[in-house]
Length: 367
Ligand SMILES: Cc1cc2nc3c(=O)[nH]c(=O)nc-3n(C[C@H](O)[C@H](O)[C@H](O)COP(=O)(O)OP(=O)(O)OC[C@H]3O[C@@H](n4cnc5c(N)ncnc54)[C@H](O)[C@@H]3O)c2cc1C
Image (cartoon, rainbow, N blue to C red; front, side):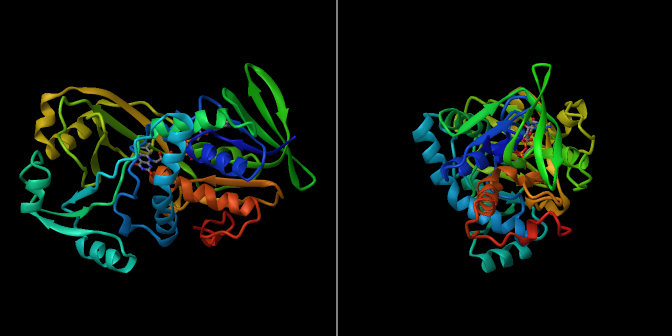
């Protein structure tokens, strides 16, 4: 019997498995589809909350720790697997933020590098940007990560780890309890039902986490929030930094691919893309970088963010069951928060002293 069953093979489940296995535990990951093909694939990969000063302390605490640990994580994964997740410190230029003062106060309090910039800097740094922007905030330390490659690197690393077993196309249909504990997970795999036992069960099922737990009478408000994205492939670098205005952003990848994000839609578990999403994102993109109009959109997709109140994830033990835990509800920030969020839960599971106070993420305490 494994020490842990991790339910959901997104970036949260995979990084948690990596943490637990590194401490000597055995882990089985159960993934209903393919690992890292849901929100963790669909996301943009900005390694920062979009307007970080607007977030609460619990989100910032995880973000700060995760931002520090990303370079080391990426190097380790690249060395282990030969897959480069392309962590690029491109910086982020925010245009027309209407709460500039709060941003600068937050930067002074937290020691973050946020600079107020005017048209001289903007024109020099981003000559292709629409001339309608003449002021902004520059955060030179913000990075982006090519999240599908992060997923591939994590999968490859875990596949070579003798303590980890990944079962894809394996859906957990229910958690069966007995005598105050989860006794086993009932799974559906290749049309067959089966049971899997473990010492502990961890729900890392992203937007689907609430549904899995509600069968046990645990009602955590984790809801799917659809986000659509577009992809361009210009033949040259049109921007060297992440550009952000009015909640819409452009992310440059190393090979000139440019991602445009994202919509926020409450459409339950519907992941379809729409003409409206395409047109609205396209207008935002061209409004930032007029030259993009020379190039076609090469891909449009959507993913489901695991929305939780204030974007604060649930991390800890759930319900009255002794061996049932959760790490879900990272909303718009799961990629940035993942290394710190999974470290925190691993600390709790392994009885290590956590570096971050776990109480704000406790599923028992209303967020
Ligand atoms: C358009 C968009 C843009 C984003 N941009 C960013 C960004 O720039 N920066 C950032 O930090 N974050 C971003 N995010 C958010 C980020 O992608 C998510 O917060 C994060 O990926 C959540 O990871 P997860 O592992 O919890 O969920 P997921 O990646 O969704 O993984 C959950 C997994 O659980 C599996 N699962 C569900 N139910 C079951 C079951 N019953 N049995 C077995 N498996 C199950 C699913 O198949 C899935 O693979 C973005 C998201 C979207 C959609």
